[in-house]
Length: 223
Image 1 (cartoon, rainbow, N blue to C red):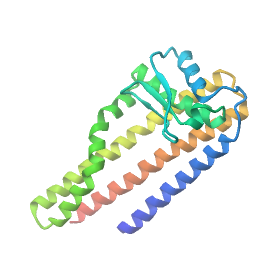
Image 2 (image 1 turned 180 degrees about the vertical axis):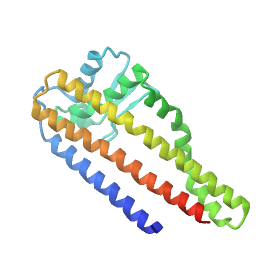
Image 3 (image 1 turned 120 degrees about the horizontal axis):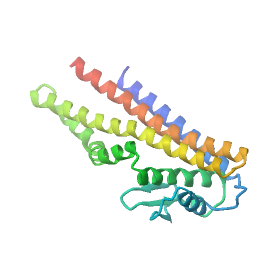
């Protein structure tokens, strides 16, 4: 596979996943939750139901829904925090799933948090190191630089792979909670569609990165 073909394949995977998740989020943003409670209230109720205390639920930037273990806080988009829709409910409960993981010492989350500083640094500089290695490819140092870049990129891929069970488990916790409170079947199905679509973006990112890593390894072996 040529490098340009790899780029095209990864772009197609990313665009397809992004298009699907956006369509599902928008679709169920228009479907009101029969409970009438907002995403913030849904998050607070799920936290209480699981006996998780000390977690702040706050309004964040649009599209930036996340749980931050450093501050033990959940940030929700205004369209999630303030609204009562199937998308808002599912998104809020998913983020609470991460808070529950943190409170219970969920091992994959611990592993992801431990590798994050290395993966974050590696994602920023691996390509620069790789380019330097290519410019010096005829020398021993160049080969070492390329090897270092590949190892750094492998750390990024490892982080993305570890992220998969973390995300799947958070969605599983969210669905279990929503079923336990008697969410109507149609809304539960919509929530599952939202969470499945969001999970697909992580799968797509991991797959694209893994293909890139395999290409780099193949290229290195051929040199």
